Amino acid sequence: MAHSHSHSHGHSHHTGHMGERRLGIAVAINIGLTVTQVAGGILSGSLALIADALHNFSDAGSLIIALWARRVAKRPPDWQMTFGWGRAEIVAALINFTTLILIGLYLAYEAVMRLVDPQPIEGWTVVIVAGVALVVDAVTALLTYAMSKESMNIRAAFLHNLADALASLGVIAGGVVVLLYDWTLIDPLLTLAIAGYVLWHGFSEIGEAVRILMNAAPATMDAQEVAAAMERVEGVENVHHVHVWRFDERRISVEAHVRLSPEGPGAAEVKRRLRAVLAEDYSAHHATLETEAPGDVCAAPGGMGTVAGS
Image (cartoon, rainbow, N blue to C red; front, side, top):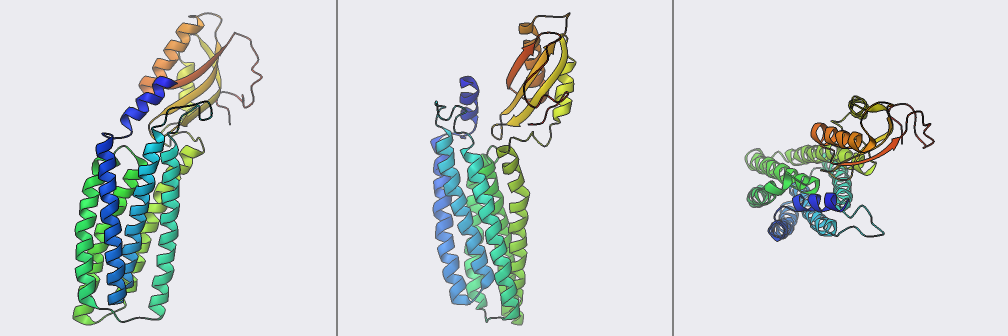
């Protein structure tokens, strides 16, 4: 177990302090942008600008939580947290996505209220502040791009910043429309679009975090297929009490009871072959296998046929 934990930590924190420094810079510029956009939105009367500011603030918050979670995840296992602290990042992701969904719902509500009661908008302020936001969002996305490949938290932040850049383009377009045609309804309509985009990201990402925390098998991995592959290994009569789950985004674990066939290799060799199949074919490098002699009746709970429910 110790080897598995150290292996994961070595790959999950990018380049150590460099990755955390990038996160810190991204947090700072997002908070600065949020303050600028809120001020601009109040001065101009643009709800879309304030909506974009709230989204940027959620990005800053998610980056702060992600930074904290990455540091917590580095802690080694102990007698209270025997699996280690790696799931801190998954918990952080769940918090981030839940908050994102709530913000999206609030923005949608405010946009509908503004459609019912339109307000005057200062177009030039909207265009200038949204232009600054576009530059900052692009810089933040560049800072988090490399880390987004290995962390659910950072990947979400990267996607949000990318979405913010697109939203800023939309806000700029809205400001131009107000300047040219004085059509103020474009602002709440764009706000609804931003809210829809935020909600789409939140709902599409939160399911993965929930699945990991619920110990579900990876969406791309069929537990019955895994059990069938294990039963094809020489010396295996039956595989049952099978559980497949992910400890975090990268580590897949398998637990199973293996009934040995009367003829075939010994238990040690069967286990070696099973672990090789699991690692090579399914990237499951942590396997807990309990062998049973031919004819044994398994008394473990959940032993219902080949693949047991938890």
